[in-house]
Length: 92
Image (tube, rainbow, N blue to C red; front, side):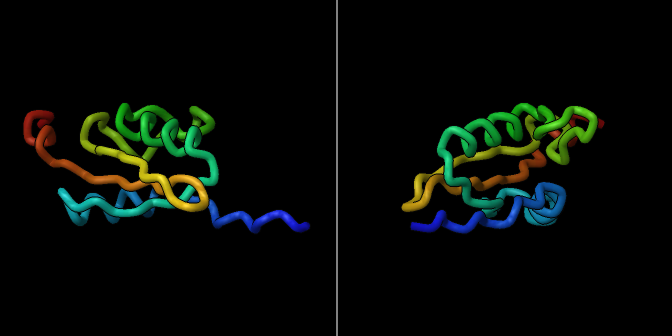
């Protein structure tokens, strides 16, 4: 029995850029096989924390301008993001 193939790695830089171009719209980022991983990444996106190694930072800054949610799928959990510009005007 062979292992299922891994999906390609998520391009969070590109996902954040697409979300900024479409404020208020939920966009899929990737699907994770582990629900826990998807929820952890969603938390890091919402709080502006680094994804992985801290020296690379996160494209989801400033904190609180991105929302993230997970949805269960047959193969794990899908991660969606949404850019909200509601606080951006108060940051300037």
